[in-house]
Image (cartoon, rainbow, N blue to C red; front, side):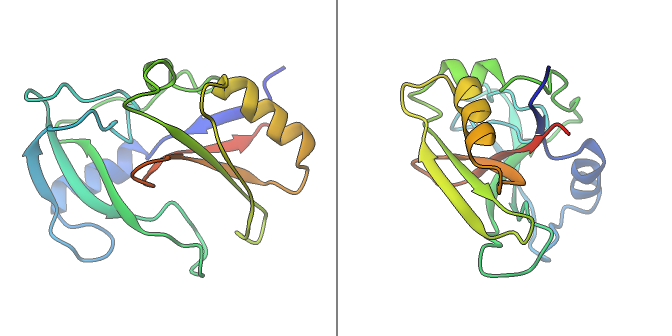
Length: 160
């Protein structure tokens, strides 16, 4: 039985950003050749450095405006890409590259209050997500973030 699902930034949201070149904060979106691995927040695949074109925008993964809102920089492909589809497991290319993608899991309750945070380190992120959701019943969803840059990677929801 699946206990969680990965929720990337939606293809529709990304298309809106590409068509307006403005993010939800009114900031001009910047296009650049990838200098880092990313990942793209839609496909959840790493960028090819020096090859892929990406858009830099300000994004908040939250629905409620409060102290934990945390808008910050994220990247999406300049070209249209498919959303991450293997939603019942953490993106394998991110999981496999712990050097480029050191991970922190941050859990939030239904009021969008932070109730859990833990570095993934050398642990298996899929196993850790299941363990956290089993033990922390007050967690409504989790954000995976880059532990060094603190930027949002994806949302992880309980499967009910």
